[in-house]
Image (cartoon, rainbow, N blue to C red; front, side, top):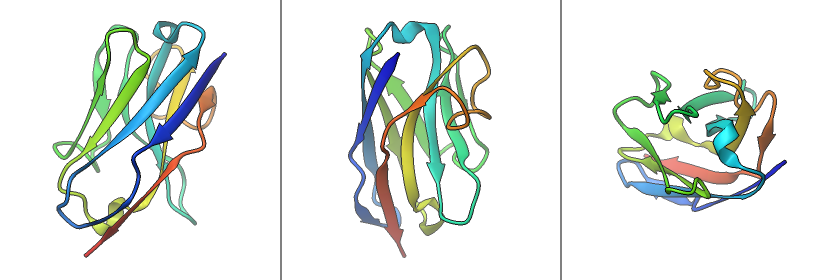
Length: 123
């Protein structure tokens, strides 16, 4: 099992960068495809960034070129760098883990995730 704790969410102005952090505890996170998804009230959960077991990263088209993800060597921390945020990026952001490959589309639908951290972007 994994325990995931997100932090770093806050209110920002459009264009003001921020970094979200995810602390990972429990079993070996290298067994999992990991990443971030976001939830906006009234909309489906959206997987936005993932890193495969072999280190390959994938990003949703909605954030490609603006968001990036990194991890520490022991995979006990994940970070999501939000650059040039827009009001439509407002939502609750979750760190998540899923067994298997190609997890971007299933983050938050199975596996593990934390309590989330709120990001609010004003224009």
